Structures are given as C-alpha cells and as structure tokens.
Length: 333
Image 1 (cartoon, rainbow, N blue to C red):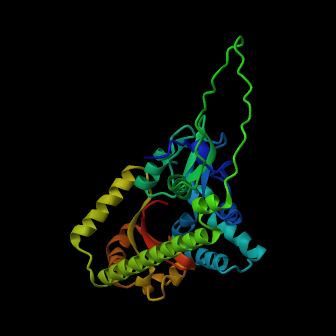
Image 2 (image 1 turned 180 degrees about the vertical axis):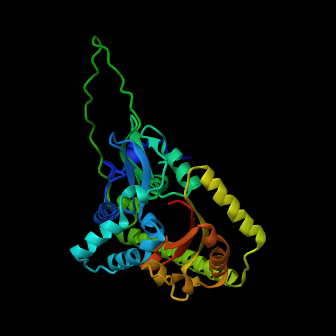
Image 3 (image 1 turned 30 degrees about the vertical axis):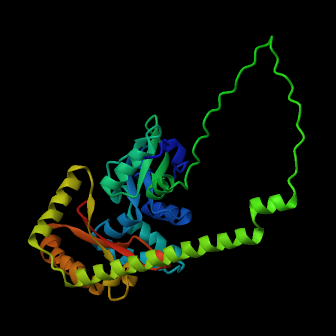
C-alpha cells in the first residue's frame, strides 16, 4: 500500500530555480554547486514553464557548439579549472536557458499525494517534478525522494492520535498508591534472560544469515546481468522492435516531451566499461557492442538525416562504478 504522504511532506524546499533568460552557464554552475542534475525554469511570477538538466547540455543547443561544449563537460568531469576567458567565450556560445530547457513543465501541487509523483516519474521517465503552491514553485520532488518514502526511510509516519479519558470534575480520579515491586532472585532472572553472551551469539547468527543472503542476492544479480550481456551481444534489432520504438517516441512527443529513452543496457556492453560515456568523450559510440551498436548504426543511417539526435549517459553507479547506460532519442531543441 502506498504511503499516505503529501508532497509538502517529502519535497526538497526551497527549490533552486532559474529563469528562461538566465545564462546557461549560471544554470550549470548551480547544478554543480548544489550537486543536482536538474532545475525548474520559472517565469517572473515563479510559475513553472520548463525544466533544464545536465542532459540538456549534452544533447542540446545546436551542432555548431558541440566541440566547445564537449571540451567544457570533459573539463568539469575531470575536475579541471576553467579560465575566465574560456567561460566568457562559453557564455556567448551556450546562450540562455530557454535554448536548452524542456517545456512545458510537468508539475504537481504540494497537496498532491506522493503516489501521484511516483506515477508521473514512472510514466514520463523523468527524474524530478516541480512542486507548486498557488501555482508558484516551492520545492522539487525527485525519484530518490519517492524511493526513500516508499522504502520506509523517508518522512516519519505521523503518530496516531491518543484519546485521553476525561474525568468528571465532581469525581476526581483517586491517587494511585504505589505497590511494592518484587525483585526476582538471580536464578529467576537467568532463566528468563539467559545471558548477555547468548544474546550476542544470537545477534551474530542473524548478521551471518543477513550477510549470506546479501552475497546470494549479489551473486544472483551478477549472473542475471552476465546473461543479459551475452543475450544483447548476440541479439539483433528487429523491424518490429524498431517500429515499437518509433511508436514510443511519437507517444512521448504527443505528451509534450522532447526525448525518450530507447535503449538501456549494462555498461559491460561497452569495450571500456562505460568510461567514454561517463566522461563524456565524443567517440563514445565506438565503444558500443552488440545490440546497442546496431541501434546506433541504424540511428546514424536513418534518423540522424531526419534531424534526430542521440545521447548516452550512465544512470546507475553500483559500488561507484558505471552500471547501466541509457541511450536517449532527442527531437527537441
């Protein structure tokens, strides 16, 4: 059963926002400074009109700026300092937020239940939803916020109300007389509690069982991913599947989206384990193997001439290493 929390209980507030005519460089600096991957874009009254994310910087703003943008992203990801002259030139090249943002914004009122945010995030395949009050952005709820609530590690559940009996004024409650508490003899306590050492042993047994279960689950997951890698290395891209991806893209566009995920696969399908995609490097497509490589080739030959762009990013980092890769088909500006 979904937790009965409202977005006002779970959102991150106040929201960090930008305006459509802010320099794109400012949006990037805010995301880096606050360690977030996306920002709501609001009008002069604070009403949501779009979203801008790190992904928009990778996939948007025109082909003539790709070389300079790739250099910029590479320096940021490697922790290098960037000269002021370079940033001034970058401002001219990148332009303003409205050139990158995805619109319209998909938002929810802060009185909406958390289940509604979970539904939107799942159906639209988005990472965050602006939260509004009286039409103005007051916070943001992310995929991570939803997971914390549904896993039981988020907002504490409200304590149930306790109804206290009301004593009549004419019948005061009698003052209880404390009773003498009998202290059990040591041998009785031992029979009830065993010993601290025995309880510690029980705790140790529990921890060993838990560790065994975790190892078993991890091994099972590794086996499943290895089987998936083998499958995708040998699996083709059928015309029926291609048609299904086209249908998903059209449905996403009809719902106001400017991109959709078309491939998700383990980073082990890349010859470098996903490093080039994570940096990112311009030649990341050359690292692809198997089915992702077939999709890239078909996009290059059939969709790129039609104006579609293709991006890739690492979306999970188990144990700090690249886990899953998502390739996204983009048709927005």
